[in-house]
Length: 471
Image (cartoon, rainbow, N blue to C red; front, side, top):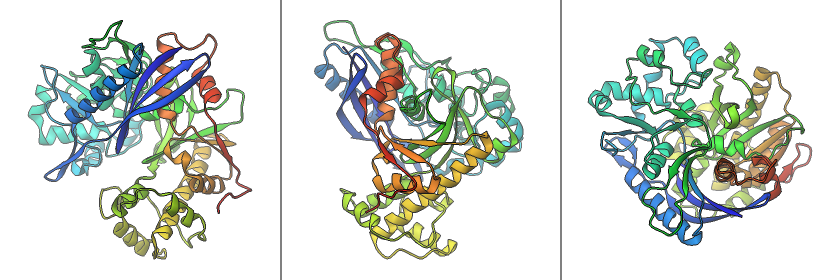
């Protein structure tokens, strides 16, 4: 038996989750939950990194008391945002949040220096203005002195691992999302940095998922300190690592369903074709030298923002009422730029309905149904696009993450995609984090894989496109 601690940080909340591995099964307990500290200063959005670290310390204390023989700890988070670290090891400023507007227009600025074809061939990463590359271009224009004073640039999860271990690294699944890593070699593309006139120093070494960084600094309890591990620092990589697919099973795709929807397939090599680039697919690093070939879509963000405005404490009744409604006459493009930013989401949806010719919902359940139908439709369209680009015929779609608990969404997705949907586990990200830790220190049973443990430990639900479960 061994116990491990995972911190799973999302854009709205973070959790500390204890995982106890016994033979080929793992049991998890959420021991601490907190709001991710997003702050507005003037016209900008930042993550309060000191408050975030404080919550990590609180979770560590709770975890150490609950599991005195805690063996390891790791952290995963969203990608692209980063902390500029000074010579003394402290942040030079809070990291900007990816929804901050300062990166607008930076993509076209970048493509005037390096053509899209060249940028994609070198990095394999989709062209999104929120990527780390464009945040750095904003720094170059607006805070050039900060670039010269920066000793390390560390993504959120890797910065917090540095604070726990004292060792600055960037784990490969996270490094790949910056659009500054060579997709073939897995190393920093220094020539690309020169093209953008970005500093070529301040980039820690890239390490594979499952790298042991050392013992936890400041451990004052009896016994050896838990080991700090760079598991899969990127939350989507951790989630995909825990998809309960079988090696000998049907052809499958994954959908990581949360604030963002990320739909793709796991491959041994990147796809760098014109079709992949033109359709804005991305090649992100995964566990064991795999590639997550995927595309981002707006996920539950629009619904989450509406519920925040409506101050919805429990969405169960809303979802039940939405499930009893007929499908809307038209669906919306939830990737409309107006729906990306925070605030006034219902009013933004009304404006999109007017512009796109869709009937305007009159009640909150009608808004919920419209959002979920639109999300399912966009997933179906993307799955068909994925099949065309890869040449694969997908038979099963594994839905993991928070959205896997939404029966209505999973049912609508099965119908929109025309494939069987397997929903669960909802805690795939934490499970991937925990089990990669366990594997790194040799705690997994011999011959047992991460996915073997997930299948043995978690129940899933199936949704078929020919049979509706909608109330």
